[in-house]
Length: 214
Image 1 (cartoon, rainbow, N blue to C red):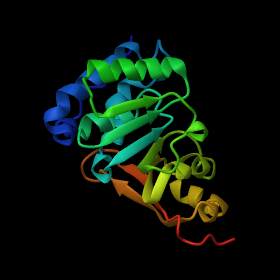
Image 2 (image 1 turned 90 degrees about the vertical axis):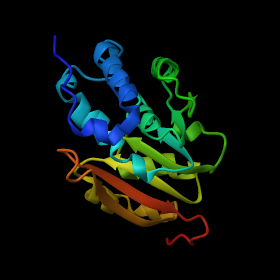
Image 3 (image 1 turned 60 degrees about the vertical axis):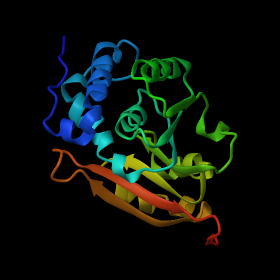
Image 4 (image 1 turned 180 degrees about the vertical axis):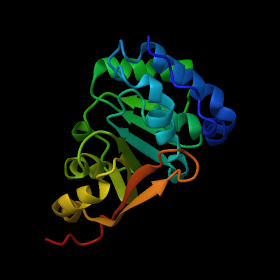
């Protein structure tokens, strides 16, 4: 059986006094993630580095009420909820079995700052009310913008965890960026000098009063 990656030294400083909760979540993923279809069989040796720390380094960017679209295994939603108990997290996930997993983790970790919504992003019924929306490993930006931007209030922000192709995704999504009135679209690196593989974060402001340019 493949073993869980040893906890990197940076984890304790990134999670602070919440590190035990992070360890509990990582162990739960290691024990049940593959059998429940949450992570692939090759992920255990890099679970901390590639998934948990990749998510938590973005934690300082968030505030208010934040949606995590396609929360899946809880990456980044559960990890961020552990690290930022002062932020209210809305985990939006369409698959029942994944929602069950998320609910189990929220209960086991006693996270009182999380709500779970079983729905696709396009089925969201509250309108543009969230302060920020995040997503990780969901889809290309041109597909993701129409799913996430309508959930964000005027002046709110998209904070999307992306891969090495992030800059190219911006170029490919120019039409959607104009249509959904996104401004200050940029890629930032977070975690440099802290973790071995820094995280690329694509950020954009949703400016509903900003005139769309066709």
